[in-house]
Length: 53
Image 1 (cartoon, rainbow, N blue to C red):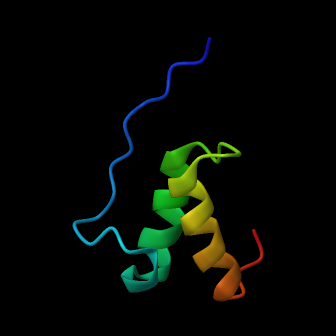
Image 2 (tube, rainbow, N blue to C red):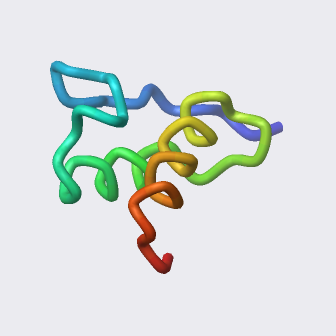
């Protein structure tokens, strides 16, 4: 069983309002778990901005 650690986001947790650096850091902190709505929202914004990760 994998224990999910808490995710710490910047005060503004809207991915569209995050800086590029905040966005990448937030995505890395999510653990990139498939099915995690937070990780998926952040990934969608990363893709919208055209980042190649």
